[in-house]
Image (cartoon, rainbow, N blue to C red; front, side):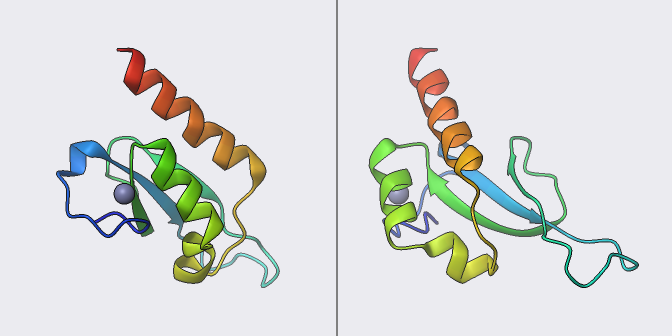
Length: 91
Ligand SMILES: [Zn+2]
């Protein structure tokens, strides 16, 4: 389900953003990495969002990722998401 518009969709139509699980011996102040999970096989908590500009914008505005995964979303990740959508639309 998309975290922005709450629509149930096929996983193929959704982009999964995953907060990678930290190693057990990681220092307490380690910031967990957020990555886009293209294959849907990464371990960690994830948030789904439609491959749609409107949903990405909404996701950012309502801070859904921050609330659900308790981690700051770096600007680079938003840029990467935008890239994914552009690429998907063009193919
Ligand atoms: Zn959506």
